[in-house]
Structures are given as C-alpha cells and as structure tokens.
Length: 61
Image (cartoon, rainbow, N blue to C red; front, top):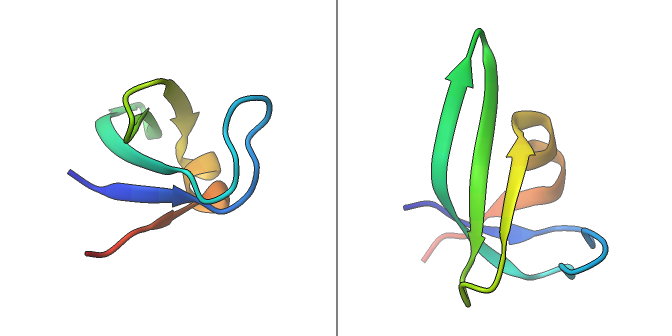
C-alpha cells in the first residue's frame, strides 16, 4: 500500500503533513481517481489524479 503525505492544507479537516494510505484506485476512460484513508482511520478523501500530483508526496520508509 502506498503511503502519502499532504503537501498543502486541504480545508477544512486536513492539515499539511498529514499522512494517508491509497486504499483504492480506478480508471474509467482514461480518468484516474483515488480513495485515500488517513493513517488514524478518521477520514477518507476521493480525489483525481491531478489533485494527487499537486497536493500529495509519496512517503518512503
């Protein structure tokens, strides 16, 4: 499972530096979307590939 860190604030609930896991990804006619789960299991985000690239960075162990 990929682990990501938020690069900028994502109002209203998520702050810069918060960690997420990618729990699902899908593609429909060339459009990719992702479901992210917070590491503490308190919230989920449904985002596009464009938002993923702009607002998140991959965390390496």
